[in-house]
Length: 250
Image (cartoon, rainbow, N blue to C red; front, side, top):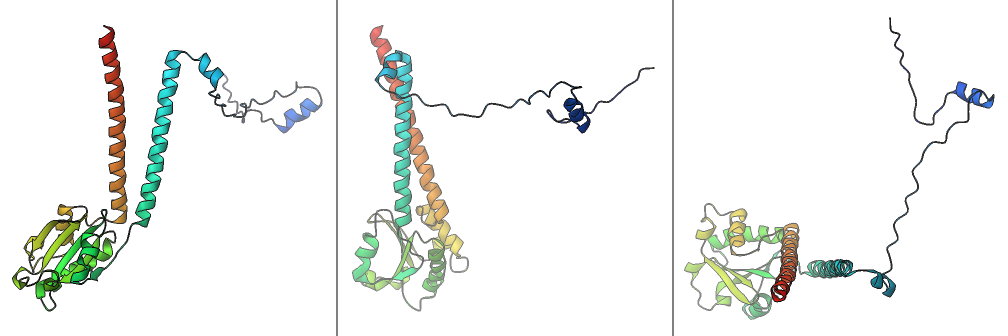
């Protein structure tokens, strides 16, 4: 009958007390050293001086030039992103609906800045629909501080402006009035108007009601798309040059 034995072994290099005693008595050979990997030493990048260039062939030099161009492009993009983040941090943050007068309209609305979206509410005190809309705009102004919200008495902005057109909402960007809405119809009417519905309509006109995170994400997406487009154009230009050279040689 076969005799089966199970041998248990510890981790490599580990010995028992009995084996240690036997080695001290000379009954067992010395313990073999445990293998350890060599310590990691980072590879030193070759200095690209005149001697390095002279040792490279044409293909290697072309590859090095392309890598250098990519590094320059990425560094340029990084510096650009730093400037954009600094500009975003310095961007005016509003957070409330400002009451303005007619003589302030050009300064605070038309010339508010090329990167500022301005929502203007033409209103009159005691007008029920204006009060409903104003409640929504107050909430949106606090929620989306990167957008400027202002309100102005209708006849102060436009002399003899009819009350039948109240409330009126204007959207300004980069010195121009891009959109306007008369009454509450576009916002669901007096019975259904909510801040969310007003934000939905404003966002259909432009990136008006965006949180700071969404605003930054949108900027990043635009930059990534632009970077990819430039890289594709650069590759396409290189491909076109090669094709033209081939045709010329033929």
